[in-house]
Image 1: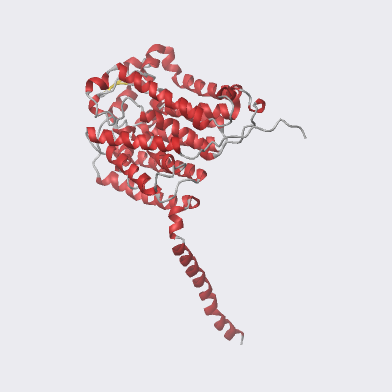
Image 2 (image 1 turned 120 degrees about the vertical axis):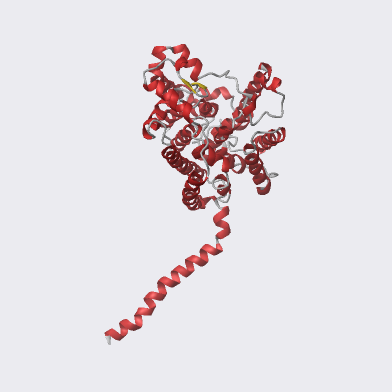
Length: 438
């Protein structure tokens, strides 16, 4: 009798899990549109895209020919350092002198030994493939915390960009290393680990100086959060790390190290420019043009700091005060505010750069979804934003660049910058508390 009961109960135990799976699949199918539109599904979509990227990235490595550009020059510069040359003016490669700070040398020395003195290119490509996947994870963690970008956009940030895959695994540039460290620092800022974040930010600067484009935004956030006296130790930490990393070279030839690794006036070649091909070469090389771009860069930073980031109603000089002594009590910074200030600061710098080369695309590529979707102006529809992303990708994939591709890139930058200016406030204006006593 008991056996009979068990036999009759057996189908029910099978049907029940089957029914649960059926309900789950039906629900997933019903919510398939939400899965692509709702930011709360970012991690789920990101996991699928990262798995897809494993296959795509390693397919690119094995199917597309590696192109030598700077890797041999990097390795030659590293060899000079390993052989005991600490004078920066004496470190040379096939493409010219070493122009990156000391952190670059230390990291690429590790790559030098990991790749049989730089000769094992497949191993180097696999290392950069892992770096690419780590960068994606760091970026997705940022987008998960801001919860502003619909997940369908991430397909265009991952699988659809040929240029970014090329920069990482087919060219082996140092730009991806610097940006991976930068995104790690942003994650630390979001976790309120400001000191550790500043250390990681300084380490990114020591790999390549372009990371300094984020510095105005970081300075604003530090002053907002801590005031001048509270921000000073963290700024000192950034500077101290640069001194420690550069110490062997500073002791040998301090002027040579500083002039080579932090050369703000370095001249770029017209033949490699992506963004200024629409100008004659004489204007591109003219110092007045460079000064005009610098003035525009600083002006836009100041405008955004005064009108878009600082919204308390007090003078911007109030940021120098201790937060507890301000008239308007500071509110905790949200993830969206932190990321928006940092990414906008960098984007303004990219817009007014004296020259952009093909590998510089990674300076801001992974930030574009946030810039276009986090605080969108109403007139910029999903379709228009995707069109902007597509034109930017097309402009960076046009080689050599043309006047049309450069003009299209500037147009897209202008549209993005305009929508950042006109978009709803991500720093809402605070209301000063009443002075009445109750």
